[in-house]
Length: 229
Image (cartoon, rainbow, N blue to C red; front, side, top):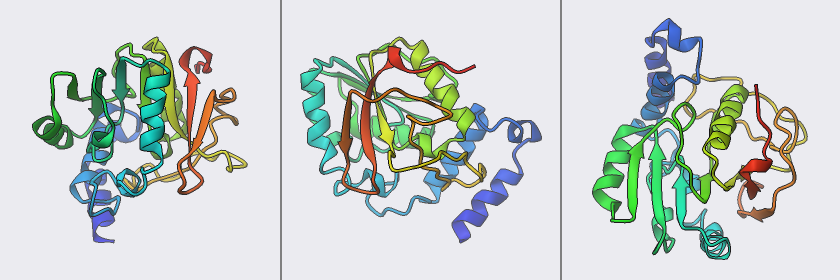
């Protein structure tokens, strides 16, 4: 309760202009930095939350490793990359890896601990800043924290990159998508099935159950995704 109170108080002191457009970079940076600072996602192992623990990713790590090999992936964008807690266990030899996240301190720690000649970390707003063209974008555990307009803006941004594949979280058991009700809570979550309105994604090429929370990792060709106005 204390953590959420601190975050809500901090948000109250954001400039009014930021509160009227909650997908702006300063708002998102403030919100997710507060969540990181106060460990709002509740995992002692990973500052990025329970979904980033080794236990919760024990099925998807070999799946992603196989996917990288099968698709002949040479360039990989992990956005948001979080604290790299589970991704570090995947063999990325021969892959040019870029990890992006909006939390500056988190990225700095990743740079200090995990940087390598083929691995770099960049502080970045993946919604509002142009993304590099890569073979595969992994965008796991992201869209559930965004309002509908944030998801649409993110997908448009991903499409503009002209990258080939998107691997992202999906929840096919959801009967009707609902917009995020509380944008000022860093622990905000709304699960969505991206195949349903208002997103209307096509059927994925691959759908892999994570084994937790009915979450599925789905693979799409980015050129097949809808564009939003």
